[in-house]
Image (cartoon, rainbow, N blue to C red; front, side, top):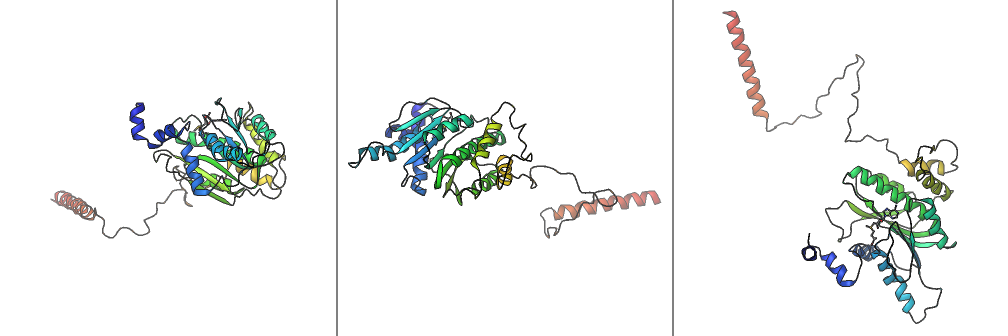
Length: 316
Ligand code: SAM
């Protein structure tokens, strides 16, 4: 699509350039804020997967610049915005930038250090892998980014804080919903107007961070470390006793979910009866006037006719 043609066809692409946003994604965060008021009262925020930086621009324009320009502004009292991405980003006023991989435990540590013991009010994550077009694969890699985001959340977010994460809607969306509900009593999957209908993306808006009693965020960090190690999750055995208290249940659930329910897209072995064969069951209520009823009657009549003719010819 040419530049001029895209200007005409995508209103958000054009408006982003008119208003000085680096990407049209800025409108997604602005619209989520319009709906859920996520920026109200926010003093510290982490922007995960931030490049090229339009969400960081929103945070700078809505939080940092008004505080800096306020007549009561005091140095050291300005909102803290930390942005992370694999890619380098051009500077944005009031935004501390970290270049790194959020699935790497070291990057998580750098972010945590920037907060110097203080907690964030909000963590946003617009992370997306390079999509392959294989929906299950894309959804899986996306869920790894969310798990990494959640690990950082459990270390830096204050109780009552909010987490916004891009998700890919797919067959395991309800599992992701349950995983997020472990930490947030209010989880809404939102689709801002500026997110194309043709895209499977949506945003999980998680409110009122309430870590479980006895939950130890260090174990989630350790999980991230193990998954990110060269041996992958091979040495990750949740039954080997390294987990304690409620983490014994929550960490395996966060890592693998509970996929034990039947999957309607798979086939399963047929249940055998006592005599070792499968007996197919009749429909509970066959249709009373199906459109093919007449065709069945004709077929039945013609095979009956053929049988009678055969009988006549064998008798004669
Ligand atoms: N919110 C951004 C904005 O408004 O400009 C757009 C984010 S873009 C859709 C997705 C970003 O995720 C890319 O810049 C990519 O580099 C980043 N990303 C993907 N995987 C990542 C990872 N493991 N660690 C850090 N960043 C990652």
